[in-house]
Length: 232
Image 1: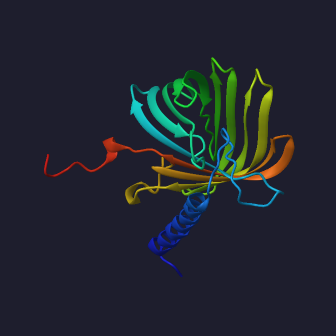
Image 2: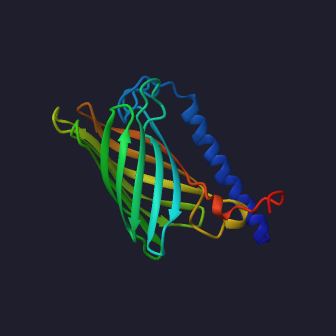
């Protein structure tokens, strides 16, 4: 009834509309500020305020088995002031990546380990970070099923804490990811823009409540762009 081209166009339109809605939610929210858990006076008292995260990944291929990663992250784009900006440099050997980073807000170094295991239709991601001076930590673990090159769904756990002050927040929930590709790359899973939406059940401030999370992961790939005809 429908051609493959028509179905692909419809699918892409749905994904783009979903991304626009998610972006609109992030932009409309007014934030006050709480480390990796923004204090936003929007939903009612039965939920925790939503959070937004932005990542920029710049990847390099050093060899067949070794990759480099320069990454910038804002863990809470909804904060009005003192946003938690981090920069990381990582070396990935197979599925394992060792990371060193710097927190601009806390003015201290960060160390971390990440895992990127993959199976036939599943993939997972885990990240564990530790800040040396404040003795604080952050972790995120996800497992997702590929429904198509564009859409994935799965589950995640995420938390952070300060060991000295005994302040810890943990959350678990379901997520969905939208992989937005350039037209010629639709059949591949290494997307340029990834939008993740999750609903977590989180303990924060001594209370367990639902919390919405949106993450934007942008990965430019300049080595795969078409070469400029004016320069070549």
